[in-house]
Amino acid sequence: MERRCPKVAVGDRPAGAMLSNEKMEVVPLDESADHRGFSFSLLSEHLGRIGGVHDLHIAEIRPGEIRGNHYHAKRGEIIAIVYHDEWSLHWDEGDGTESRSQVFQGAGAVAVVPPKNWSHAVRNDGSQSMLIVAASDKPYSRHAVNEIERDAIRRVVTSP
Image (cartoon, rainbow, N blue to C red):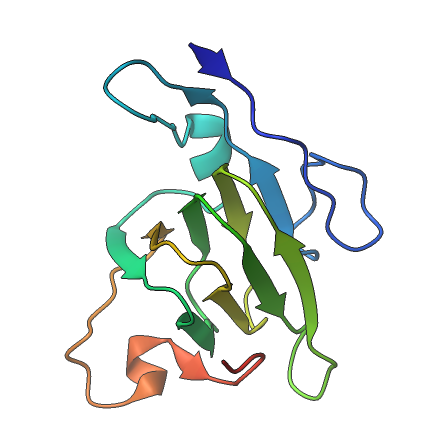
């Protein structure tokens, strides 16, 4: 069974629009499910938004929890978000700008591409765990001694 995710509009942009890297990009991913379960793909057209992939990070977000609340000054990132309930995307457009958010409901997957220096966070507002897979165009070292070296600089755009 093939099912398309609903088109998602973020802010004043049309649903499903691919955007320049000066806007938060949210692109629905097509689902090709069968009796084994769901399946989504990040295609070259998606990954090409950040260039080459040099790091993958896979994480769960439990109900009521948040991943993110940081920005990247040097790394490009694309985040695939697989969801089965309500969740929200939060971001700003740089230091000193207002936080914005978009609520998503239902089930599906999207690819999110935050521009460099824009803080971003994913909050699970539902009752089921969700998965994210984040791909970066530069290597990430979680063992780096400070957030500048890790290029995951904390700036809060949402809280529980």
